[in-house]
Structure formats: structure tokens, C-alpha cells
Image (cartoon, rainbow, N blue to C red; front, side):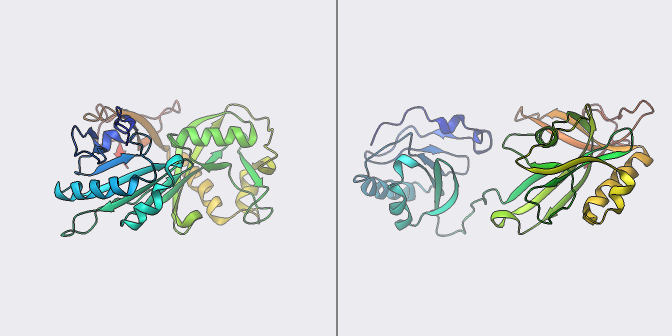
Length: 305
């Protein structure tokens, strides 16, 4: 088994949540791993390598040490070059938790006096739809090559990518599908459903965007047809799903009432991480919302969602 270098796990994107710390010492012939704030241990096969022949013995000694030390959740992040570890881990009570292209993560809950307190991996797929309306009261609509209902019209959109904000995702999807540039106007609606792809739940967030350009150049790989459709035609078109009609009706009602669901960026006081806050705001006569950050906004005029 190789000596563990400074672990990349402690520098990972989730280190702020788990508060990983290096394990300073461990018995000879065991894995060190890194310790999380829940008294668990994570071993990364790229950080601590060993041969397939020696892995069973090292794993057995490590488990004995972790049980004696009253550690709780034990995690193994196994990369492709150490895939031979996986059968031995399974034979020692480890279960699959999540996987990506180049690794799989397995876990085992050690305490016998309490039920396993392991958080589920991502169980919800997040998508965005873009309601783009121009000054001529037309809606940007697309008909997909592989639509669930052939020939149906819908709003441009797609799945949010890792580390991508909802607004950025909506703007990107419109650009990719139609080559039209846009800017954020308001959140319109949220649809939540279950039993979607890969057995996940599905969260679909509709954003109203203002077009900065209007010349369409569709993505032939994804889009069969794309056009600017009059709102009245859209609301009565037989090939538009009722849910999509309701998104437009909701947005038109927001405009009638002079409200929008705006977005502000704030900083977490403890974690020093930036995050987005979506709030109902009144639209001023100049078209701008009166939402400000929570540190300066009046709680009587801005409702936090």
C-alpha cells in the first residue's frame, strides 16, 4: 500500500459540507483515508493504492480498526484502475452509493446499535424551460426531433449542467437550440414530478427571458422546427400541451399585476459561499424590480420564497 499524499478529497467541492480532515495516524497495514464531521472515513483508491492481492488483507485490518475506533460511515471511492477492489468490498458488506464515468463510490455503515444514516445520492433531475416573448407578443417555440408527442410545440429548454445556475442554463439552452441571445426577466413556474429518467424525480423550472436577438438558426440535431408563434395561437394550438399553455398564462398574469420573481446573489455569512435567492418583487414603472439583497431589503415588501 502506498503512502497517502495530501488528499484531493479535502480540497473537493463537498469538503465545505463534510469538513474533511486528514487522518494523522493509523495502524500499520491499514488505510488512513480522511475523516468527515460525522466521524466517517473516506478512502480514495487514487490516494491510497495497493495491489489486488493485498487489498483483502488491508481491508480486513482497516475494518477492524475502524470498528474499534467507533467510526460510522465508511466510504470507498474506487476509480477504474482499482476496479478489482469492488467484489471484495461487496463481499465485506459494502453497498453501491453512486457512480460517475471514472469511479464508483461504495459505503458500509459500521454501528450496529443505530440505523444507517447515509444520505441518498442525487435523486432529482433538474431541467429548465425558457419562455421567450418578443415585443410583438410572440412566443419562441420549438418542436423536437425526438419529442414524446410527435409534432408538438414546446418551450426551448433542457437539463441543468453541473455547477450551472438555473438562469444561465435557460439562456444557454435557448442559444444552443435557436441561436437567439436572451437575458433574464423572471421565474415563471416550477413543475415537480416523480418517476422520470433513471427512476429519479423531475424538477422543471420555467424562466421568462427577454430576447436580445430574434433571427432563428435552429440546432438540426435536436430541433425539427422552431418559430415565433403569436401568443393567441399558442394558447389555442392543438399541439401545445395544457401545462405549457399555463406557463404562458401565468407569465401574462405576472405582467398584468406588475410582479416578477427576481433573482439576487448573496453570500453565506458562515460558509462564505455565494448563492442565489429568488424573491417576489414589484415591477417599477421603468421595468426594473425593487428587489435588493436580504441585508438591505424591506421584509414587508419582498417575500422570500
